[in-house]
Length: 236
Image 1 (spheres, rainbow, N blue to C red):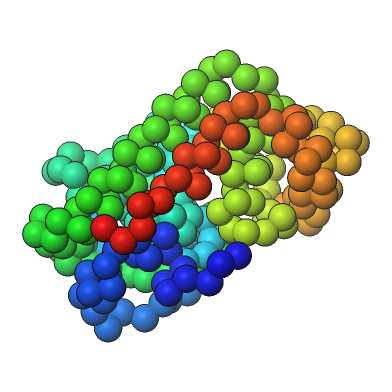
Image 2 (image 1 turned 90 degrees about the vertical axis):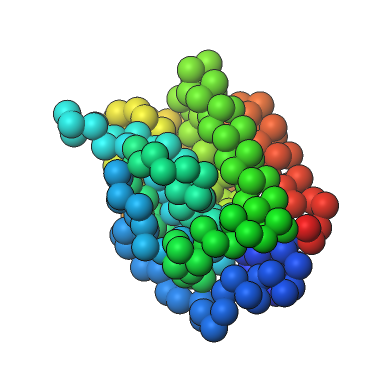
């Protein structure tokens, strides 16, 4: 993996002076598993530029069911939706894979978004990316079989954390995919028998990436292309 200045693609896409002014004296901080980054219907105090780990925004219904709304890694800023307007969000965001990142106050982020064109452009590009991903995943969940969707999701998580060891329980995976835990267990078993994954305590390991890619739907390659193209123009 190519070494970058910050380890966050959005920050690395900004002109140096814009990123330095935005972060100020902020140091990279640890973000442990389960840390709440923001809550439903509340404006957060901080936004986060992840350098490692995974944050997930999850909708929790009154009936106790949950489904993932988005997954974010080191490609952007967690909490970006709060910069676009006053309406509250529908999900709770927590760290699902422990990592690290830069924590910036929501007020400072809003000022930068409102007054610094380069920062605003980069955040809007990331916002567009996330909306396109959300639409693709929505179509994927409607059109493709559980195994294909599960394979696609595992590959996307692996890409973000740059690791084939995925420390996630079947319960969490079922929430992310909006399906039953028994379905996740069945699909994971089929993939293990095919040699694509291996079961690990508290998670899975991608054992054969090509085999897993062959079982993923076409949405993975579409989303991978989108991900690789993000901020391709370099500094704003």
